[in-house]
Image (cartoon, rainbow, N blue to C red; front, side):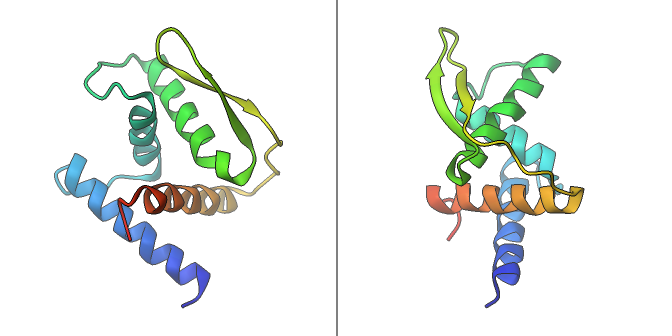
Length: 118
């Protein structure tokens, strides 16, 4: 199976499982999935978040997702429980479609390595 086809199938599986679990079957988009990963990484799923917190949650998720690719490195958790990362390597300039593919690949790897999908 080609790498692109494998990514597509795994991505569809992630979207289906998360949509069923968190959106009553409504299809979650990429940003919603990144947001959910941020909540997961913060470890405070029942907390109500302000708009600024939601942006920070997405930042946490992106750092966590791109850490295996060498772009970020976990640094510490602050007194409020928020993880912080340092930049290890600047992200390359990617076109919008290339950014989307990179994030989908990172999300699939995140859920594959956690055992959420197989």
